[in-house]
Image (cartoon, rainbow, N blue to C red; front, top):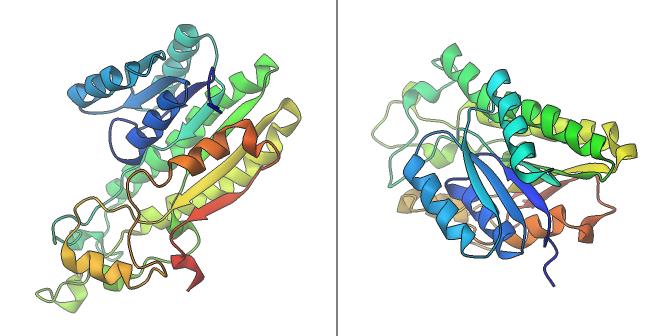
Length: 272
């Protein structure tokens, strides 16, 4: 049984990473998919072609959802093209990565962190979620059919970053790279937004939950992977497709009585 069959979902930031995986699981399970992307037209076109092979309606929209006018126009376009929306996935974010053994830039330290980076990352990860919710959530509440909002948070919404993961032996102490402050603030903020929304449109049939995944393996350096897996009870990072069943559950009627919750799927890291 395809729990999402016939539903229409809008997924922000879906041309790569976990967003691409979310878009794929929706198409595989019979949902129509609208998705946003901000940069690579080629990647978005490739994803659109890939997802259409599952026999559903798919369309990508180049949009900066953190901009009020663009978010409003996005909602107008998507609602016109698809006739309505059942599911909103707030996924778009700027996530500083640790790839191939390179640490996050030393400018990530709180003492050195620039205001323009704070504004940029908060705008994309938190303001964008607010604006998409404002427009698409309102449409769900108006149409009388209700819907689902899912905010993609992180295990760092419930635990602090372990900055030892990013240490480099060849860097002085005061310049050691760290996970920037913005990431924890944004992901924690999404949990607050989730709880607020869970009660705001509940009488209109709109429910809201959050998914907080742990780290996904995507070619990070051996040292980083070794350090992180030592903090996880099941002793490995997540595979790219291991969140798909959780997303399917949270966005379908299988979770019809779940509302306002933060589902942490991190291999047990936050338990230790």
